[in-house]
Image (cartoon, rainbow, N blue to C red):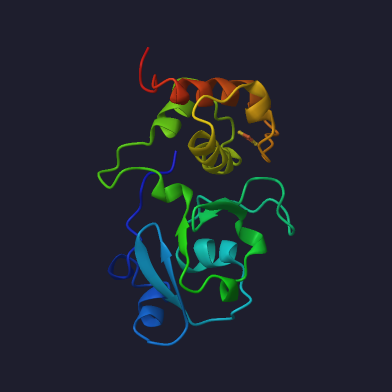
Length: 179
Ligand code: FES
C-alpha cells in the first residue's frame, strides 16, 4: 500500500521538479496540498506528470483513453482519469492522488486499512484506482450497496472484486482496523 510520500519540491531535487518550481511561468497546480509548476509540454497528460516528473507512481496507466479505473485521481474534488487530462487544462486546480489519502503522519486512510483487512489486494496494480473511486463513492454515498460499488469504473484482473466490495463496506461501517 502506498504511504504518503514526501513530494514537496525540496524533497525531490534530482528529477527536475526543483528546477521547474524555481521559475515563475508555467502551469501551477496543487497536488496533495503542495504547489508545483509544470513548465514542460502543456499537452503532457497529468498521469505522466505525476509518474515521470513527480515520481508519484501510485496512479497507474490503464489505457490511452482511460476507463480502466487504474489512473483515477480527484481534480477539484471530481473523479477523473489522469491520462485524459492535459496539464494545460489544470492550471490552478487542486489534485488529489492516492498518495494524498493517508494522513500527514503516515496513518492509513480507513479505506486503505480496510483493503488490507479484507485482503482485497492481489498484484496491487488496480488498487490505487479502486481506492480513489471508493473514496469518491463514500463521499457521495456513505453506506453504499453492492450495486453502487459495482458501478465504479474499476476492474481487477486478479479477481478481487468480491473482497473490494467487503473492504469498501468495512470502511463505510467504520470497522477498518478492527478484527
Ligand atoms: S489486484 Fe491485480 S489487477 Fe487488481
